[in-house]
Length: 288
Image (cartoon, rainbow, N blue to C red; front, side):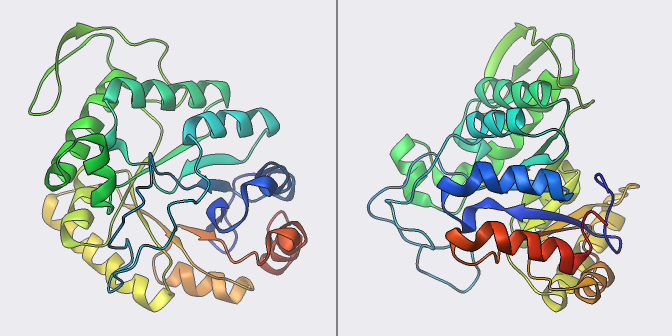
């Protein structure tokens, strides 16, 4: 198996649930075993004082401010050099915190050096203090993400780009080389709110969600399909979500719920992650 799906579901690996010290070996194993993709978490900075959570109904941040964080695109470029097949994704990248020139260049570079293996997961962000530390208005995060993504897409696909918007304003520029994947790498828009789901339908190739169950996912997929129909979208919204699976029957349930790609992260202790990954590959029929 290369990037083919198991039971109709592509299976990826969430790196954020393990220690960064095992990431290189884990990704090389995922590449060898036949997992479709690996996904790296991302923050620009973690302030000492934080509130809120990306998980609905939770008020406490899921990570302490001392959590090791790396530049996602620099690290993915490194992983690209260690692998040949596995796709390389962000789960998710806070695009709105960056100027689109810098973000578009980083994504383009990894897509080129990896031979076209980038999957771009983006989100509007949930950590207000991170935006405040950068000096940006958290209340504008959704609009800023949409405009930044619009600029990036144009830079990746048009010979000359000029833009005069609410957040970014510049005259004609060239941007070369273009990404290997045209018109651009797949864009998966995250978030569980109605606004986020609508944004995924309007500007995304797909939607990417946090950890869920097949039952919880069914509701989100129904909303995405309803929104897509109302918007007159002809192509399906690819659905990527984090979750658990122990066998192909579990993958069948995810497929029936509308899941296109399942990102698994329950690999246990970092010292056992490699052996657990081998076992998951066998249990799920990956590479078979």
